[in-house]
Image (cartoon, rainbow, N blue to C red; front, side, top):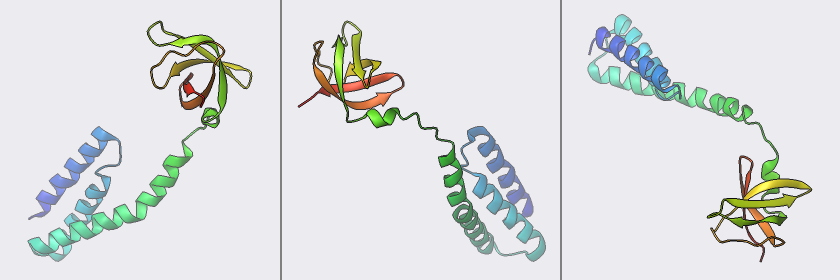
Length: 143
C-alpha cells in the first residue's frame, strides 16, 4: 500500500465522519493519517502498515472515548419528570385510547395520560405511572 492509498482513506474516513456526525470513523481517519506519515518516513511492509493502522486507531479510540462519554453525559438536562415514575396518580378524565381521552393528576399537576396496557381506565381510579414521554404519562391500574 502506498502513501496515496492512506491519503485516500484519510479523506474517505473524514467524509464519512462529516456525513454521520457521530464520531464513528474519526479514529480510523487518525489511524490512517499516522500510517500515511509512517509510510512516508519509514516505508513499512503492507503487514506493518496494517498493524500501525490498527494499533493507532485502537489507541485513539481508547484514549478519547472515555472523554467523549463524559462530555455526552453533560448535555443531558433532567426535567425531573422521571421522578414521577412509580408514583400514584388519580384519573380525572376517563383514559380511553380509542376516544383519545385521558388525564390524571399527580402532586397537584394535571397530566395527559395513556394506559400502558391499552385498557380503558375509569375516572376516579388510582393508577401507577410507568413511563413519562414528553408531556404524557403512561399509567396502569394500581394493584
